Length: 367
Ligand SMILES: NC(=O)c1ccc[n+]([C@@H]2O[C@H](COP(=O)([O-])OP(=O)(O)OC[C@H]3O[C@@H](n4cnc5c(N)ncnc54)[C@H](O)[C@@H]3O)[C@@H](O)[C@H]2O)c1
Ligand SMILES: [Zn+2]
Image (cartoon, rainbow, N blue to C red; front, side, top):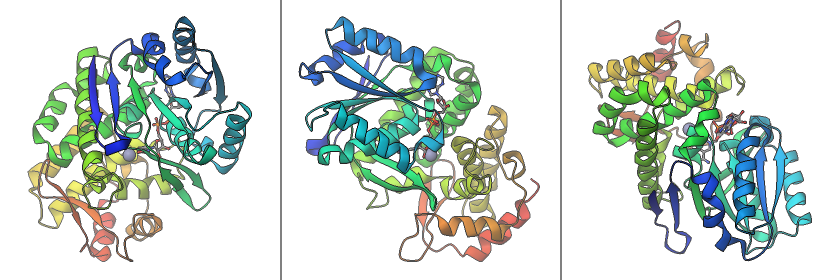
């Protein structure tokens, strides 16, 4: 068992990582139950894992009530938020209770946000079931829903009280979702950890084929990196946490062009966006071309998109930059970009000329 501490003063919490943890989760959760019934929110695709979790709570004498929502990004909506909040109130959730979010980033983001506002904030526990959620979204307290104007525009910072990660639940995750989640793993190497990127180059194939040891190492290493970054900059005010958005400005533009649909999953957009950020940095003379080539080759090797064409996007730079300008990450009217000086040397650049981005993307079209 590995425990990673997220150090945030009185909001500190543990991330517990262990194969088979779900079947033993009842014992870990029992003290948080305060002798009361616990609400679990899941999506329909994690039903087998919900049964395991409820059985382990039962075994500890903890009653639970499951709320099962439809799978998919569309669940992060005002309508589902309203329904969920009403349901939690109906169930008698109190401020001192802990609601359990069992699922991927969609369930984690929605439940976390609901728990930030129900009774002016109740407790919650993240039990992430996708690779993306295990290595990224379940840790750090960013919660949100989407609106007609864009993704994650309405939300709150609300830290969980505990995160329970059982890598074995990934056995049922579709290969495409596993690969998409991997983009957020390799991101930690490309931000500031060249040794981890080298590890990824060597072990990604095994990880994606289901090798338990490689998977567990990648999760532990990624969670430790995320915990360190969040501990240093909880609310993304100093620029440290913004590093986690590597590949996301380019990636979101591609996702927007694909209509935020299953045509291009978030992690797939991030993979292509990361390769684009490295190539743009090389074109601008900031990073060695060999490093950009190495990142591109890695995305290709693991079967992730590495540019516009492989992401299924065929449009001009002006259209993509227009999507970027819609992004919530505008700061005092400028668009900060995460660029790089090489592998593991990502930095926030506030001086990027959007005309350069447009012509770079025009040149990338068809690649
Ligand atoms: N809060 C953050 O810091 C943060 C960070 C990154 C991404 N996100 C958000 O996360 C969301 C994406 O998360 P995601 O990729 O986990 O998507 P998701 O929650 O939609 O899960 C992907 C698919 O896998 C299914 N699934 C989940 N676990 C499964 C399992 N163990 N076995 C079989 N099927 C399973 C889901 O039902 C869904 O169909 C986006 O909304 C994104 O904005 C949030
Ligand atoms: Zn992401």
